[in-house]
Length: 159
Length: 159
Length: 159
Image (cartoon, rainbow over all chains, first blue to last red; front, top):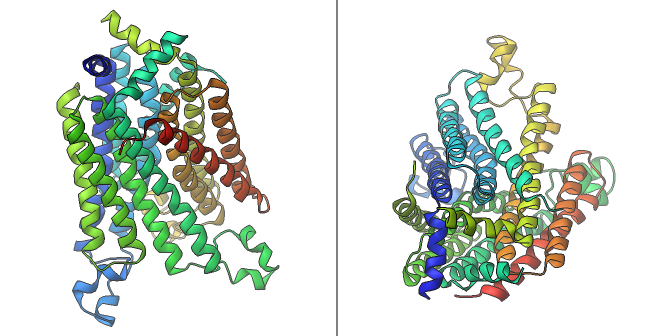
């Protein structure tokens, strides 16, 4: 049993893997934050989609008027979906990349730029910033994931 | 070659990792089930979104009337998206958590509560149960993932 | 330090894991491609959802008319969401499956069929092909993931 745990700990002692774990946890938490932001807009804008969510506002017609879409809610939802589309590949490809034995400094550069780009992307989407703010922050994160995928395929290619 | 396989098996022999693999597989299967539930509602309610999906109902206007939204279909789709938003962070953060060397009993507690909460959430969404049923089951799963992320960051923090 | 890296490399030297990394990277890149396809349709069809994205077309009413939905854009978005719903479980369950020690030939069969099915699914969705083309390619990928989940649970079951 102790031998097993020692083996496990080796992965966590590896600095590249620790860096990956840190940044993967941060961007996943950032993605989870979008649920709270959407909920905040739903409650403050009183814009719901499920009838059972409006029952505290009364029965019948008085509650039904809160079953509507709101621009801020929809914006937060699009930002959340964009996170899913981009953070999921980062977490999956990043794990393979971290295990493929990159230099720590190169790996940190990838992880930091991606994390910074996605945080910027969220601000650009929610404020919103004028384009190409959102477009550029999206493209930077996308390119980082693409670069990691290229390094993974170079290291492990087995078709 | 045998040496490699032995190394691989050590990960699977680790009890925390086996527990993670069990519950991660279960919640991912639960999420996959949502596709079947959506398909079931699309077929029984005859509510489709792609024109090519309605061709078996005939050509032209007679088929076009099945290109519509249906409350049950939309509810299943929202439940599926909510799974993506919550089960993806659990699977990603849970892997890092399992590798960070937690106590088996603490890890099992996290995995079991999350899995139970997400199964409850699906029932609360589809039946639907009155609020705060769905809200609470969502919050419990969310808190478990947050607790695992906190433990990961405490163990591996490397910025 | 060198000892750690050697341990890490063992995972990458394992042939099943290398095969997993190859195909997981390919399907995640394929999923990322959907962002570019959606952007291509948004730009060529001039169909946007965020007001700040249409500002280069002028101010006021002249730009507002590009805030609209377009069938090709919506089709690409549905295909992207379907990828998220199916490729995410493949990547998560596939990792656990690769670590559960399957035969290389069996593992390659799973990974190759899934990857082929999802590439077919994208063509079936975007062209579109008549049904049951899209339905069958979806079902094949779904079944492969289900088969891997069954093997994972058989190997690691710990409730």
